[in-house]
Length: 401
Ligand code: MLT
Image 1: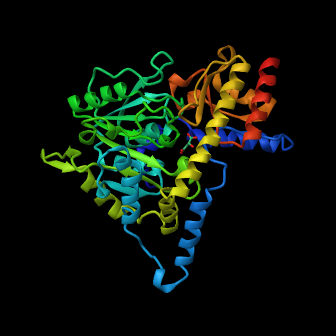
Image 2: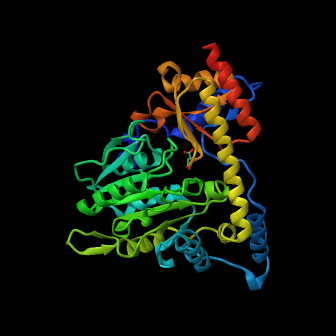
Image 3: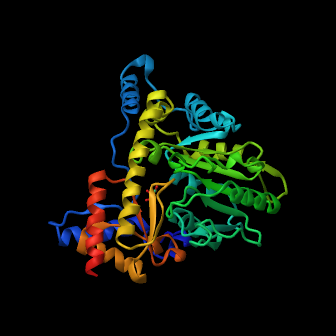
């Protein structure tokens, strides 16, 4: 018999959103007449912006003509998209990033998992809790020691910067699941920590486009010294509705280095280029052309409108939770609202109650880690009318408890 990788046996349960989907499917089968409003997984619902759709149509047409046909693309992404990312997301904010430091991919989730190929299993990993479960599961699979950094309401869900040295630290802001943002001063604290300890920060800013507050940093590279200690992960999924199209990117500054067993310094940029060269064939031409259109004036304007729409939903959710007497946070610079369950109810129990009595899908907080116990997450990615209806149903359901 083939031996399997031990790490898979150490995973304690199903991947969070698979478990949520399993429970919802079982309920739907038992109760097909219930109209279910899904506010669990953060999947977008608005159609993709017209400027992006047009670009993808043109890209498909290119593939139908010999002169414009595209086969394998560069595995790190087409030069025009890497350049557009640099100009649109970094130079426009006064941040220096070289196009060769931008690696286009099929999304941030894959990159966040795949990047671990570069790091020894001996590294210790710091993960804020509650957290996007991908960081935990992928490190459990590899067998790295994880130190959780609990985040609470008191620290605005940004956690205490630890005293001990951790090799790799994951930060995600605007945060999934709490919707919290990080201040410039706190992010400076983390960069300082990483530089002092020789740590590497994996900075997930998939929700950057939702930042409204002008004082909140959009990129870790706004902080001096971050190029020496951080990689940044971004995605077009939530920015431009690409959850089904798939496109994202990772920035790895050229000065970022690790060390091999012989004590030689190795460039992570070169290592990732090597890794992608042997394991990845690039995001599709059509999705990259779509992503490129995100940076056009129309694309910018239209994607901003979608984000506004989702943030308006988040305001409806916050208001609805308040009306129902539930304490909540997030949703102002992020698509997620994080709330306490009523009367301290167990969050999976509350998930079942809301599903069965109100037909609403939420994500239980403990699915994001121990510090999420007694909380739940709502996403603002539904339709406006459905969001309003969900909050009415939630209000009635809580009043009947
Ligand atoms: C979420 O709901 O947390 C996200 O949609 C999951 C993801 O981006 O993979």
